[in-house]
Image (cartoon, rainbow, N blue to C red; front, side):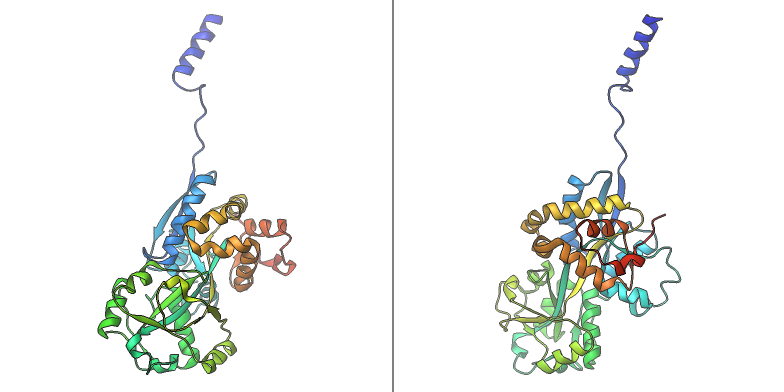
Amino acid sequence: MVKKTLAWLVFAISMGGLATAAPAQEKEIRWGTSQVGSTGHKSLVSLSELLNKNLKGYRITVQPTPGGIVSVKGYAAGQFEGYYGSDVAFYEYAKGISRFKGFKEQAKRAPLQSLWTFTLEPGVAIHRRDAAKIKQYGDLAGKKVFTGPRPWDTRAQIERAFGALGVKHDYIEVDIGTAGSLLESGGITAFVIYTNAESATAPWITEASLSTDWVVLNPSAAEVATLKKAGFQTASIKPTMFKKDVGVPALTFLPFFYGYHVGADVSADGVYQILKIVEANAKDLVTVDKGYVQVAADMVAMQRRGIESSVDFVEIHPGLAKYMKEKEAWDPKWDARVAKLK
């Protein structure tokens, strides 16, 4: 009997059955973001590298899409587990307007908010040769303007601002890689530019600087007053991230909040761990992507500001709620907005 038992043990060990346990299978998070060359894609690549090293039980794959809005819709349709969502997109989703008109009736599930990472601050660039005659947003009326690809939230923000100001421009959709050359040739009069966390910009904007001499077009003081009455925030930003003379000492841009969110596919503990990993490694993230400077400066404040921007539009992931309560930064008025995971 003893010999048989020993023989079985030898066989089992030789087959690996008792030597090591099979590794736990990782759950894939297909994380949708914006297109290659954009801020959204660049920053998620940096984040995914960090999480894949430190987040147990999950494996992230970055999935570029034509724009953040497409990733939100993809999550709602079951295509992704993660998405690149903004307060602008969540507002449109909740109201069923603009890019989400008629969409909620088709959605399989609603987006949640779980990780807020930075603000994005869009503005407008024109050619230096036009700076003497185009001095405010209103001067773009009737002009050909590329406010960004149709799915982009930066475009939605600038278009909404133009709408509030009554600026009826001629929207021209172009590939982001050709925006600079088209401005140089006169094919367009202006294009959208933006900063990320008031400290970085997108690769395609940097590349546009090689093919044209653009400068920033700020809204006038009267236009800023009108925009504030319409509910817009403004930010005065030093233009150092562009590494060129942009024609003005400070940028007057229109910030909104962005985050890399997941939904019910990721447990409350999974989201909590994501938040803790980002918090612990935020300074390292900044060394590879300056867009994370705001979470490095105050992770909790960024989550609070993001939640406040969207709490009326989408529910809060319970993992984010756990994190905020641990940090004593939870507002009891948010209690009714915490999602229940199935």
